Figure 1 (tube, rainbow, N blue to C red):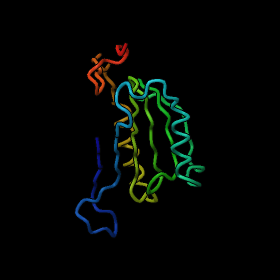
Figure 2 (cartoon, rainbow, N blue to C red; figure 1 turned 90 degrees about the vertical axis):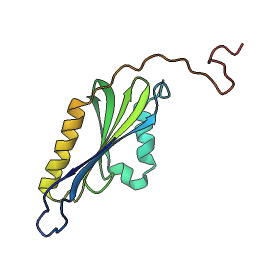
Figure 3 (spheres, rainbow, N blue to C red; figure 1 turned 60 degrees about the vertical axis):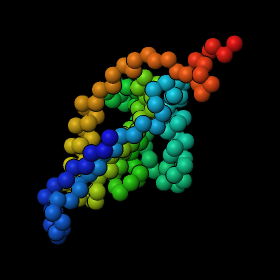
Figure 4 (cartoon, rainbow, N blue to C red; figure 1 turned 180 degrees about the horizontal axis):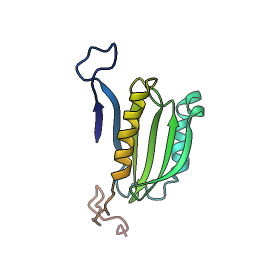
Length: 144
């Protein structure tokens, strides 16, 4: 899922509708694949991969759409970026929000608008139970 918030040209910008903020949501591990995952450990390892930049990112716990989440805020993109790492039904998602040219207050406000709209309305539905078949054709746990 990707969303971009466009708007009227800002002073000095001649483009016909610049992108002011972006929001993306990606599945990192599908349903069941994140079973037993320690979310905080995962996020800290991701930030460590950023090198010194990761030291300037703050993490706070949250609940989004009824799912446990950790929100990372800091220099993850163009400006005052934020990423929410969510665990829902043993699946891991990342929701990333980045204001373009965050030094302008109206753009930061637009980034906040798209973030608050999505995080305030996101809903995770229960994943239906399905049989998982291994490449050998045998359901897990029945290899004996």
